Image 1 (tube, rainbow, N blue to C red):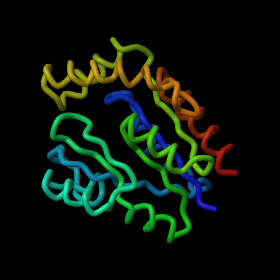
Image 2 (tube, one colour):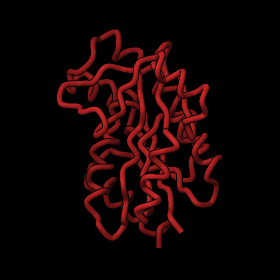
Image 3 (cartoon, helix red, strand yellow):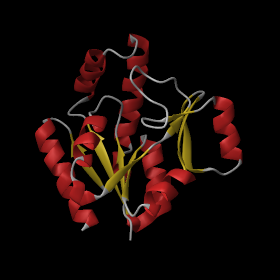
Image 4 (cartoon, rainbow, N blue to C red):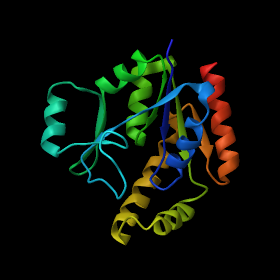
Length: 187
């Protein structure tokens, strides 16, 4: 039976780096579930590889046609979700799915997939360290960073709804802990 790994974290926590490292472990047979979103692509992001970049109209049309496993309006007018076709695509190949989703999406996916899924919350060492990481990433304005930090505080309070928490204070240690938890679940 195919398994589902759900990874959620506040923006800037190092989730993408940890997922990319986890994906290099071929013994896990993980395939990344590409989320759909309505934000503009960042430099270097490719439609259908990093995300399915949809207009708000297209996204809401697909909601009305029940094309999503789950979706959220993460910020006003900014939607993220998981298309049913993504789950089918990966399971049909015999792979396990890894989801990189926002916190509410992670909680919802766990409810949908139950014991067939493990939900993992990646936590920063502190909110102040998270702020510094976002500033150093240099992809957002100060206003956007403060919005993300405020949201992160709310998201951290929701971590109790996940099966397990990994704190990304030292990358190699967090990477090993994440691998161990996923390997134990899949085997």
